[in-house]
Every structure is written in C-alpha cells, then in structure tokens.
Length: 362
Image (cartoon, rainbow, N blue to C red):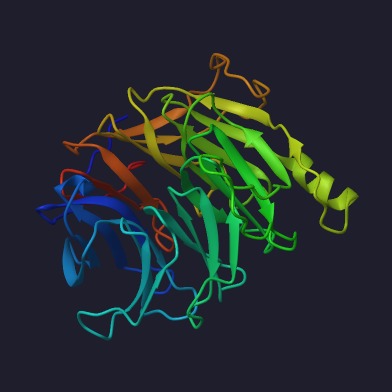
C-alpha cells in the first residue's frame, strides 16, 4: 500500500511547514506556510513554488515577523494569497510585488490557525483563531465584516460550505464541529466578568464529533452535508449531517435555535498518533487523504454504509478502507492537499522542512 514512485521534493530549511495549498488558477503553482524553530519562536516564511518538469522550483518567498500557520489563495485574483500568523495578524500578498504585503489586519488576540476563501462568494474569506473566534473579511476593507464567537477553546479550522454560500463551520478543542449561518444575527461584543468566557454565537447545528480535540475537518465536494473529521484520538470519522438541511428547510428564516447530532458513516483507524489534517479529493466523492503526527500521509475509501451514531465502533468487515500509505517524511506531517487540476496528485508538508508531491494511488 506504500506509494511507489519517488516524490518531487522541495526542502526549505530551517523552516518547518504548517500548511500547503494549490493555486485555484495555476495548475502547477503551490504555496507553503512555514515557521522557524517549529513555530515555537521566531519568524515565518511564505513559500511559492511550482512543479517544473521533474522537479519543484521555488518562485518566491516572503518573510514575516512570526510563524505562519495557514494560507488561502484568493478566488478573485490569481496573484493574491492570504497568510495566517502566530501574532494574530493576517496578511494579503501580491506575487507581482516583492517583500511587503499589500494589506495587513490584526484583530485576533491569539494565533490565527487557519484561513479559507469562499469559492462560491469569492469576495470573502474567513479566519479561525486560538481565541475561539471566527472572522469574515473582504480584501478591500480595513476591518473584518463579521465576528463569530464560535468556541470557548481554540478554533483550529474554519471552512465555508462548498454547497451553501451562507454556511460555514469550525472545529475546536471542545471536540465539536459547529455550523453557522451568516444570515443569523451574531451577539454584540460584551464585557464579561473577569475570568468568565465571552458569550458564544448560537450555531445552527453542533456535531459532537470526537471525545477530544478535533484538529481538522472537510466538506465532501460531491455529497452535500457529508463531513469528515480528524482528531487527537487518531481517528477519522465520516458524518452524515443532512439533518442540518432539514432543519434549515423547516425554518426558512434564521433562528436562535440550535440542533445537536450527526450520523457517523465510518470510523477510520490506522494512524498511530493524532491526525493533523484531512482533505476530500476534489475529483472523487469517496477518496480522502490524511496527514498525521505519526509521520505518514494516508489515503482512504470509507465503507459505503453507516456504522455508528455519535460514538466510535469497530470497522466492519468488507472492503479495505486504507488504500495507500506515504511514509517518506521524517517528522510530523501537518498538511496535505490534492491538486485541483491533476487528479490523483497529492502534496504533503512536514516539520522535516520538506514539501513532497506524488501520486499515492499509482
């Protein structure tokens, strides 16, 4: 099951990677978010590379004062990319300009953990932070347009729905994935008593996905309301959340009521340590990639039927779920991304300072 062909490799010492993303415009262009000293202290670097023949070419790099933990390509301009920093700032870069960002925002009070650019609205992007908040931005405004107090703990990732433009979701240390409708009024900022958590926004739905921290999740691109989640508990779960649509259809206007639940279609086990990142294939509804602290990247096909509801249960007999293992990294694998244009081409990035691009299923 190990991937066979040797990968294309780009080394970027002394910067350890935290995120990787393919350009939605250029078929061969890819970006890396990285940090010196494994992100514990020191500066960061945004790397722009491209597949060139049988190798990888480093096109540009931008230095930042703090480590970078996430990136998102603009859906409006093929030369624009946003970066998420450990100092709570977000920067927008133009690849036609050297050295300095074209815009910088700083509203989060802790590390910005992820960014996601809406591929439906295209003029907005979202950020998540260790401060528990989600913020919505447009590239032409000096401040965020919406703040969603989503979690009392760290919000590790935020993603817009690829099917419903007003819906986005986030995952957290609290073991949940929470779904929000941007049409729903959010609570105004309030002064809380010392030591008390801030008032949280009411999600349209809460999915109790794992009994511990949810590090990553992804929307299936072909099956609306199907979600994959991954956790510190070393598992990947596939969730059917169609009841959210039923709830929204039953309540045409946004309400302050929140539902809870989800049907688990699959519980994928095999990683030896926490699963840091997962991503559904953009070309197939049944393929998912995962990156783990066990220094491997794995490819899966979930079984075709529900096996549990809100709880874990053993993998049933039948079709093997694990398709391939890529284990050529020598440190934590923290990011993976399928090519948007070249079916079956996968990129993974690691604390070993390397970007690797390969075809795991060939």
